[in-house]
Image (cartoon, rainbow, N blue to C red; front, side):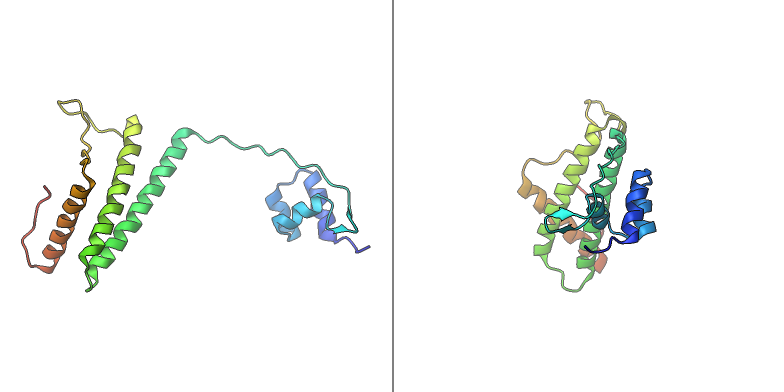
Length: 173
């Protein structure tokens, strides 16, 4: 029979003594898989384990608040939008501007914008004040996706032209 490593015996005892798993892994220099293998009795030799298994602890999971998860989700969406915008800016800044890229960018931005609009609309605290018609100040997305693409393409092309100095500034319409 192979000798049982001292670190495995120490890790098992620390687990029994309710030491946090993170501390056990650090002190005994074991991976999580190795720790649980030794808690289950160690490697199998001839169909049996080297040690008796130790029952697993019950994991107590803190319940996160709904507001906290919503904030985290909105933050992730904002980071995704920033990454997408950065990519668009890089492509526009490069000399090889291709109008075909703007259609793909417009679709991606439309999806991200619609997702953000839906997320903020669900959260009463993020809603803007209602106007006279009772609607919030959020832009209403057009029902025709192709028209949205064309509109965004025109706006992107106008921005590029403005930066190149070929056209005067075009206001959003």
